[in-house]
Image 1 (cartoon, helix red, strand yellow):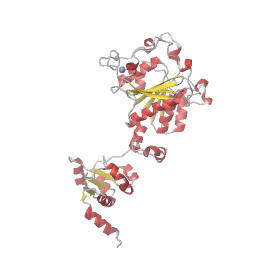
Image 2 (cartoon, rainbow, N blue to C red):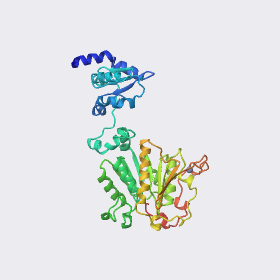
Image 3 (cartoon, rainbow, N blue to C red):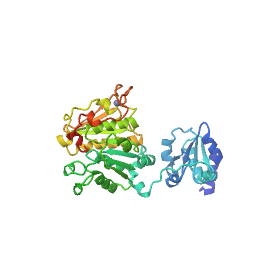
Image 4 (cartoon, rainbow, N blue to C red):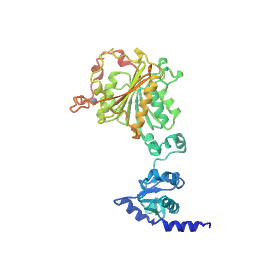
Length: 398
Ligand SMILES: [Zn+2]
């Protein structure tokens, strides 16, 4: 016999005990808080929800509940806007074998009306919901992860070969603030690999050219130009507002300078370097792994490690290494996967040999060891034997 809406509701009430807003709040504050399931539509959830509640719209309940509440004896409290949909959802949960199901009477309206605390997740615009839809599909990223990306600040050192893929991919992925440090102008010889820049921008400052490209790709991104050369006097001021530094520079004084400043401030440094046909990338995260000085306590003698400008570099190579750096920066922001902390990825492109080496922290490291001897920034040109000026320190970003 067909049932009316009222009969269905009555049956649901008989099967699913209801709790008032006050009782739900007591349960939430108790020793074994139940899992609160918000069965409203995503749009309703986004506008505000109970803290810690998981969102499973009623239409997806059967499909998603087991992933979010695998233990069927776990107490759950379903709620919706007014207490009706959650009653019907509770009935489904009972049928699925959940043993401690309750529905919050009055729903979210009553909860909010009683002045109970609620939360609102990051508010995406309709364009953002489309732009980042492929991220939303990944449970490891989702809306919470995309909100983290949009609220994160990444500083790219160099808007050159490595900085180009790093900044392009981070901008596309929705990293909200991207800083670019470079004091150079676009040169025709850069265009073979530095894909942020275009032929008609030769002579334009690289940070300005990069900003045009990144903003055209994703207007969500706030691009900050730092048109300067980093040194001991300015680096701390430049990096202090960023969550992550991505080092794409091409000279040793800057590498040591960036390393020391990042260790001092605790900012993770996603390192990359390239040479002719090979490249490498790793993550120096203070307190969790080695730093650049653990690996290279001494700089190479001047002239022994030629730059791209002197030794040449294959066009696509910085794309490979820069993409690894961009990926590692994303993993750090999202807190997913295993970042390349204490490991170094090495790519040799002619034989296409990709290897990952384990790195060890040096307990005697003058910067991050047990008894550090470097406690302030030094003169890095002098440290690298370059005082007086040689080409290595003038080389542009890799
Ligand atoms: Zn170290």
